[in-house]
Image (tube, rainbow, N blue to C red):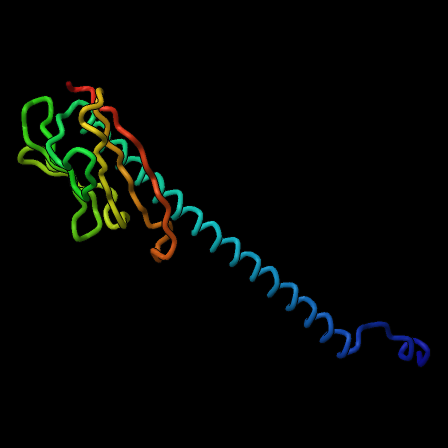
Length: 162
């Protein structure tokens, strides 16, 4: 009976504590990796959402201007807004408001696009003696939720209404 009591197998308290410390360190490392991955995903998602909103806004602007007749900006001029006459003969405008949203005013109605995302909006009209006439649109867009990163979107519209 004494022999059986002396040959007990098991872990000492020190061994158990060492294993607990190792498991805790591995758990903390995995938690940090998962947190970093989540932050990267949220940042990337925010950027893609902002880029998509800017692209949609640019597409709407192109659709509005494509068949319109430009009134401003003047030939070879740049402006933060544009006025034009649409195919129905209504005077319309596109501008950037104080809340950093693009506002398309079409007669008596107005539409806001890309609310709070746009830093700058510039329209540059080409030489009016060149046919067909062109206008270049430049957007500077917040790249992330903090607004610290920006990216630019640009296109040139060939005006088809002559």
